[in-house]
Image (cartoon, rainbow, N blue to C red; front, side, top):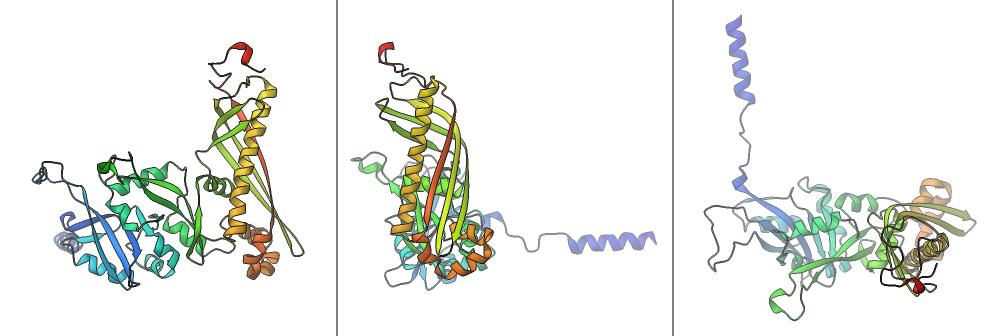
Length: 392
């Protein structure tokens, strides 16, 4: 029996091993980032930033400089599937999307609407749901792909690293689809725009970009933008504030102070009484004072309390300005206040659901902020003030 068993095992090994359907890495074109824009004829214009593999035979470029580490190809079509097909016809290698870190949406397409564009990302298994998606403010999405960023060989890698800092809105495809399918909340995206390193120097123009706030969407169309401060208010209320800094002016000390947050919390409590909607928002934060440009000695308890109160008022105003913009100007709930009602008071939400677009702008939202400064560190009395100028 043993010879037959050995023959059987050998047969199994032969039919189950091998890489008959494998793809060589030399046959793959790694897409690091992509962009989608609206063409002048109404078609979709898709672009892909593709990494150039390192090669010992390539050497320096003909001009004597280093070989460029990426290139960008563009094609247009009626939908994303057609665009990808036409992009593939321009390449000798198979498009590989799993390494793509970011999809950039041009502002014109965002205003026109992205519902049909996003459908491809829900069906094609080659798309990673952890891929970030952003709106390019004032420009086409492909403009970002062309920028030669100084720190990274491939520009989209720089965007990914910048988003990891957690100081602006970061949304991936999974977040976007989850929000879009949820009740009582509308989606947002991060915003990016080209920047200039040194103005007046032609060779350095537009070789940088910067994160610049949040894009607000309603019915999958761009409703408008939030600036840096308003985005901070959004991060506070949604509980996504990670690396926050708060500044405040103190009339008592004729100057300003700066605080770095180490942790934040938020709590949203909706109260429904008849046709009236009231929402209480409680925000808490802890951190240290990193800057004191006042004449106050913050080592004194009474002065530290003044500083904390001023910082709390600063956060309160930041959040109120943000809420005013989304309630009165855009009239769209991107925080998820409706979602909180749906989760905690489902019966009331059933009555409000179809009216939320009109009820949200009329909702009474109150803000309560409590900050705790646990350490003043080196931010005691300003070092350049003499003893007579310091207020104790």
